[in-house]
Image (cartoon, rainbow, N blue to C red):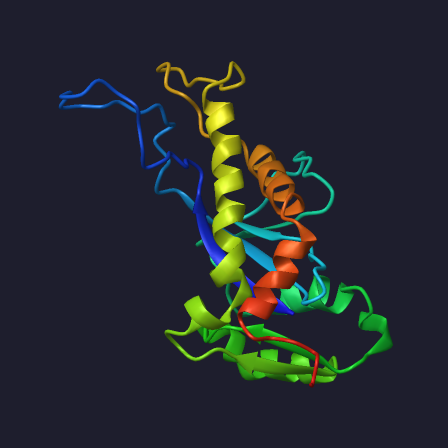
Length: 218
């Protein structure tokens, strides 16, 4: 399996526009939250299985009345980042709940050198679950990590398309000043779920093979 944290923002404008040639200023419609970030944790298996995405919003608590879509797990963290507690949470609720985990067969978990991955408490928790940890050396994730090499970009492209459709629709609410409100966290969660669901199984399988990761010992 492979797990990776990827930063995202509430506004995802594209880097290309169509406008009259010679114009000095091109206005783009956004909610002004291009730098308001949250973290999405994606994880998948070499056979193409996708684990539930984990979304970490920059908040102290989650709204009690929020109705998040099934198939995605949402957490609040003051900085909106993954930390040691978040990694422990992911191990308990995603990795330890993956298909076949109850058989306790020896497994391989591949991730990068992010400091929270390397804590002693995390290593101890992984050993208890019959899992070997493979840490990708710094600077090599763009060659050896399936999510970085093949999956994060198409995932973000899908979320960006959903954001673009939304910002151009009548569903956008406005503030008292008439400015567009940023998308609600429940809506963002649905975009993340739908985008991850749309990634083909074959793409995930190919991503592992492209990085030279396989259970085939021959």
